[in-house]
Length: 488
Image 1: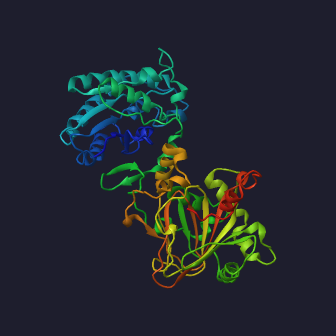
Image 2 (image 1 turned 90 degrees about the horizontal axis):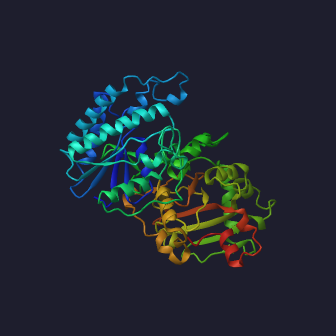
Image 3 (image 1 turned 45 degrees about the horizontal axis):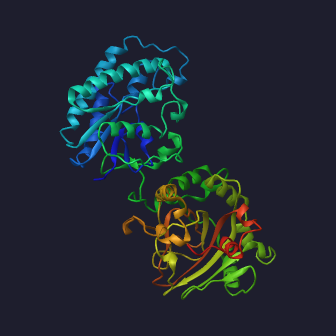
């Protein structure tokens, strides 16, 4: 299926994310994906089987299990760091032996479904000394099992422990109190090469996270029966990106949760009829204006202008300022982009699409310059009259492109932002009545719909970084682009 190596495991498999040499397959949380009982063994087998049946003899798999077992055998519950009572590891050897026997049963079962190359990754240590005693014993038994079955055991813990006492682990590998970070990829790559396996170095020093935040990048794949990294192949419905107006009141945490997950939210009825009537009046005024703050754009059969709000009068356009210049939109922008030096809606794009309108934004793309945009429907919009369309969740793909390609994502190399691995069936037409607000991350694959009947009337505000806008050395051309972005 792929040149990368599949990593099957519990939440620890997520340490192999964002590396083209590995495909992490998160089967579920450690409380259920372990070998502490016959019941959990059955869950591991079931979760793995449907994946392995889809792989071929050319594929390679690493199993990454066991840490939950060693934690459970501390006899302090699944969260020993929250338990003030002293742990009791007496008799753990018998329990580990039983776990290894179940691990053996798991391996013997899955090899009837998978004929490719199988590797077993050791149980990882922690900063709990008693658990590391169990970890070391578990790994000795696991290595013996691998020798018996003729499997390659990947032992990386000697590089992770701080010293020979095995009381703690090197901080450079720590993600949180349970998980290691993605630097373990380097250790595993080295062990694979020692075993004669050809693998490219897909590790990136720039990728840093803790596993609680990276977890949201996985989704449940019904076809394979497990959690996988989100990709452009995971489709989302209109309902998944729609939120009620009340989700954006107060601290708007509910609305922001959807925006963080999908990169786009649709909020029908955000603006009332009076506000939309006033904006429609401004819409016609601005499309017919000719001033320093309003720049006309050559726009095929339609009409379009970019508007620098700093050049407009609040007296003449009070509703425009009320809609686009408000503290809530600023707060949303700062919270989502995780930057304080950003200003929401410094510029507003006003556009009237009609039948025959054709421009670059009709093609699916992500913007070269990442930003957050606020999109207002001034009339009812659907697929027939050019509704905004996108692939929700695809911002995670774009993030990986930016990480791996860096400065190659630019206006001279525009095709990189347009040559996208998305199917037409994955594109959601974000239909909505007049008054609908759409907030979206421009890293999401998106496009303007093609008008086949009627017209589309919209206003779109976008965020700009303050240091760029205030830079006295910025070229006039660049300032014009920043204050009124249309060249996607």
